[in-house]
Image (tube, rainbow over all chains, first blue to last red; front, top):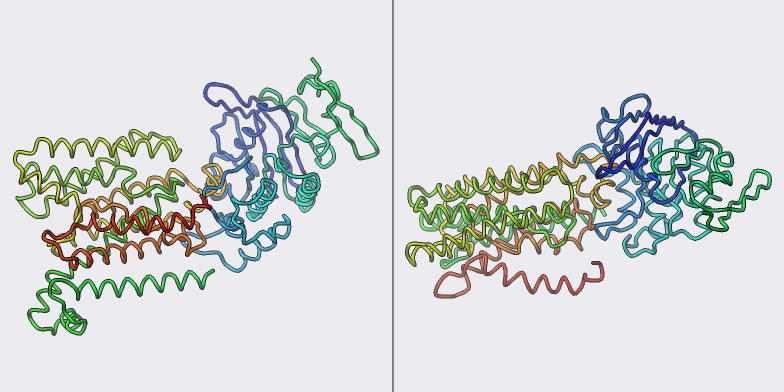
Length: 257
Length: 330
């Protein structure tokens, strides 16, 4: 269980404010979606939560300032799935996923049986066990995305921060991944994920943060956040929003100026 | 996987022992292994003892140690810079150490005491590290580091050329050239005592960071999110290369190619993760350089062939075969 609290977080990259004045408390057991147009600062906010970029304001993990925590301690609490990750060596899928166990290894030690059992479990969960002996850089984009998700799951951290986990996945696997994130949250994890598919965001997330120009412009239950007026103001689109009971579909229909 | 690794390490250690014994036994005067062992354990005949202990033992120790250092430094740098072209010379430490040695010859300091040349080489190797840090700044990008390394390396190379250009007489120029080609000829225990501590320090620093190198497979952000302290990793790695390679170059001269090809040779025999190739690269580097040094002694030629020349000629075909087989992976 881990709670991440953001207090007036701001990030400046090359003199440009990319994230400004973001405050939110992210509680365990929730699937939190971050949505917003390209360049809204979603990925940068995620990186600030991990301490990967210098940020003003405060990020607290379970009440302790992130800046005061050792990198290893942060790694064991917050697992990170970056966007469009490049792989630098032709490792097998199994070896790549095993990298997720690094934060748990004592210096100079090798993977133990418990670590291998975790690797086995997450390979199955992400549906990539059949790819275990393939070279990861030779996989298709969608297969690689799921392997990298398995790598992030292998950390077994109480929080998972996933940046666009659905990119390059087919519809079936998009549903698989959202179900998996949902299940992680139901099991008590804090899952924060950047999404572009508003229907998926509305259907699976407990809470959405809508970002625009570095600020959070709406924060709450998905269908309270994704109103026609906000979609027009933030994305510049009109959208058909259809609700059937708990399930909503949000289909962008046209540019709105 | 664990069994495969044990097999690989065991095989390489066995090869290293064979190469080491061969290096003690072979040369212009062949000595049977039984006499070699007798000499080593202090009850050999005086001739064998003199040749084995005084001449061949320091040379063998240096061949093994320098080869291991070059192989390890190449493997660590390829992992750290995430670049299959990286080698010990890429950050400028080799050229800078060579410059120190050339300076010692040029200014005649080398004649004062045999230890002056290697010590000066180690000092300039360390100075190059300071320059590298100043040029690369706080950037964690591998490309910045490579570019800074090229700048340092080129500057040192230019200074070596200047020394050759201005050398007062052909003999000095010849001596510098000979040294630059790399050799383990006529090395004494004095050289061993200068090089070994540096190489041991380099080993300790470079072997420490295997896991950080693995994590870097996922890029800088990925590695930091896995708990890697990149700044500490970088300081250890650069210090390890400067001290270890500086110490090696100080006694052997510039020996190219070992650090580049050895990691490529052992990588297909491992799971290809950067940490898995560190130790095998060190062992294979030791074997390769020792074999090349035996070759240098046995190949009949008017001038003794220089080690750096032989490693390059041996290295290229091996490297090409590897490249043909593995190119689909890059």
